[in-house]
Image (cartoon, rainbow, N blue to C red):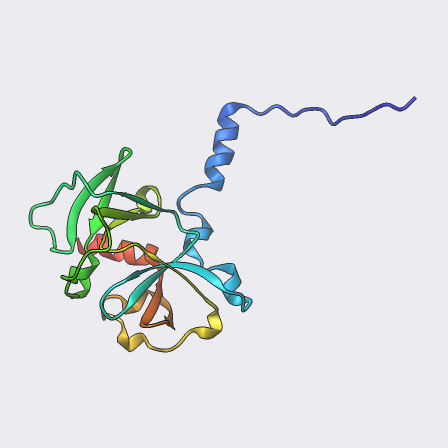
Length: 188
């Protein structure tokens, strides 16, 4: 006679399960801070990019991002022109930055590709910020071997935060958005 021995079930308290879940999805995880793992192995790494007149910004595709309606913006008196204000996204107060003004880029007066005004929220919790969109983000992929030394094409304000520069119809700069956000917070 064979006995089916099953491992005893291990019970876990709901508070402990929640702590484990939060530990795996915390906003300051290494995933948000590192370049894609595949970039170092020569495989293609996925990015989402926002294009500006002469360049584009790349963010690791694994970074938390969300497209939301652009509404309920609260402006701050005497704030820099590139800090459009703050908005409330599900109870979190998120700063809204205008990178066109920050980088001194003229906004395109041509036809908008979006039918409504959207914000792209990047990051989670206290590490989140939002950018108004004129067009949807681009899906791009590069390998680290495609990186080029074109940092002189980047806005001076952005240069300390650039990890890599790639070329595809324009220079695309992969940035350390956490360090850039911290710098913006000290300037505001």
